[in-house]
Image (cartoon, rainbow, N blue to C red):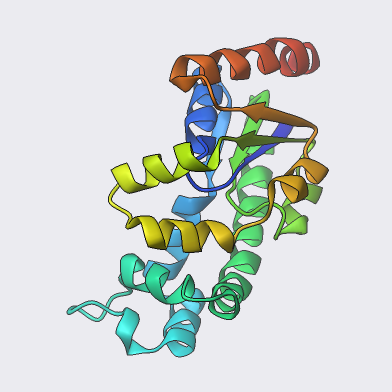
Length: 203
C-alpha cells in the first residue's frame, strides 16, 4: 500500500489533484474534512477549540462555526499556531487509524492519498507517507480562485501569508507539480506522475 501525501497552498489545486488520484483508484483521505469533523463534533478537540478561542466561534445553536473559527485563527500567526496545536495531533492519530484500517482490508488499496494542506507544519504526516507531491500555482491565480469561492481578497492574502513558503514546500517534496495550465493540464500532470512513479510500484 503506497501512501502519497499531496500538499499545496490555498487555491493551488491540491484537492483537484487528489480527486484525480481518486479517479485512478487511489483511496483519498481528506484531512480538511477530518479536521472539520474533529472541531465540530462533541469531544476533546471541540472543547479545546472553544476554550482557546472563546464563545465567539459558536453559532446560535452553541456549535462551532468553522467560518468564525477560521476568521479568529487566521487573525495572526499566534492564533493560527494555537489552532494547529490543538487540531494537528488529533488529525495525525486519525490518519494513523485510517491507514491501519485500510491495511487490514482483505484487499488493501494499492495507493492511498493523504490530501493535506499543511504538510510542512506536520512532520508526523510526512513520516507516514512514502512520497510527497506539492501542487503549486501563481499567487494571482490562487487569489482569484479563493475570491471566486467567496473569500475576501485581503483575507485571502493574509491567510496565504501565514502558510509555508514555496521553498519550504519544495524542500519536502519528491515532486512539484505546477498548476498553471488549467484543470486539463493538472489532470495530465497527475496522470503522468501516476504512470511513471506510482503504477510501477503498485502493479
